[in-house]
Length: 614
Image (cartoon, rainbow, N blue to C red; front, side, top):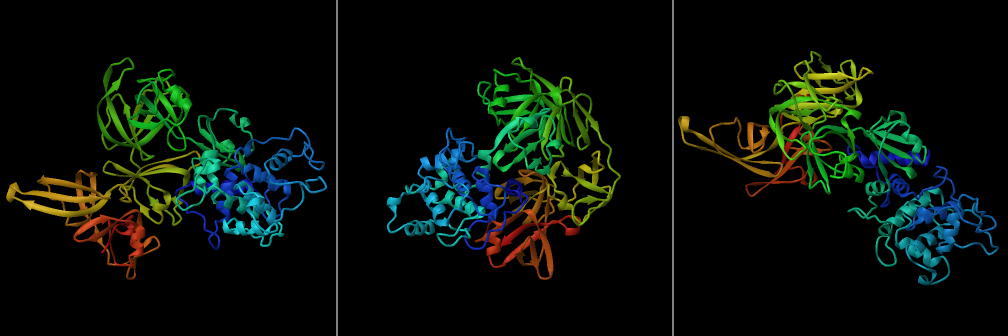
């Protein structure tokens, strides 16, 4: 497999929160996936993509130079450094730099032999030179001291070459340079610090930080933009899914890593009126548009939104959002008008800046959109709370038109793979919103696997040109939009029509108290779910207890019964009459003395919501 393609595929798994980390190789060493990711991200990896072949001297010294501070700036040599390395040779600059830095020497006959093999002892010596060691630091004949230090620093983890005279493969070199990153220099600091990076909490190179640090961009895609790329990508991702260069559209935000041969594009946008720029127009770091505040990611966006730039309070714009959800660029609304589909959660009058130091009041709709975010738009006419609507932003002046969408009469079953609902497949990047009384949860299609959805559960759906479901709004199907916790105390006072109730409860580690209300929720002390604001809930329900059991994988096993855990299952420890928020890992280590509660049957979309360690 081509190395660039391999590293790109592995990086997708690293950056996606929905995928597990790759399995480790036998022993204490890193997986090959981790090693390839790290050395590729730093631009160290070279060669033709064959990991099993023997690495040449030219290829190895090129990797060694690239692994040194400033090594990525080496070009062709100005003159031929050796008779068998003319200045036209692809590695002439690396060979010259490696010799100049004392990493390697020529042979006694004055040749370098760039196509010769690299012995383990030679590779280890170059790695030790990068760590600051010289021949004076080793006693005895070469390479006994060097090999002893090589093993002491664990530079050989994953390296298949065993003896000092064993030739190195490309894979061996990948492992050697990966191990170098976490090894201590002669001065005692992790080598990776000399390259401007750090180790993660486990003492390994932080791969995501490496990729982020070596990533180019953001840039705004425009017609013909790909011709400006300095390489031909071997892998392209758009909105987290595999794609092609042709799938990237105008006004997408693009990043790339040349050494990995990978391009990432994002089509996230937000259109609306600029309501606030903070902390000031002189040095903006965030902007509020359509009721949402976004961090400013790039210097170009900061300039455009500053008092020196094009856009100011009261202007209607389209924010082009980068991979972290920050503002990568700003465009005129006419350049990329957009729309949002969702559920209206409120309609009220709100104040807006007029761009001249004053303000005005306009009717405003707050929309819970299919991406799970809330947006605020000025509207004309009427709009009803709870209705499903399309908010279309005009390219002419940024006016918003809100149009109601009819409820769906569609029903069907989701297949067991979670890829199709009835006769329609889910589109890549499908937006699914499950709404429960004004709160929403973004749902992955796999969450619905095996469920039957009648027309009362499907409020709206839309198909793309390929006949796939691209937007789906559900009516309280999964229960994931609710909040869960434990009612720790219920007090009653008074009598008759003057009876009052006080509730004390914990929601995900935050304590709340609702004193002196006349509302008697249908709850008892123990695990609960609430609807509405946690501090002033509209409703409160008790959860259903499962038999005591233990955690097995992603399930709770209670006798012969199995219950699937919620992705956001809450775990508490009960000690001395009090509940303390804990972790799933702690529950797994507790030896199985666990109690659990669920909201509804799994067939209906229910999950284990609360676990208590007793």
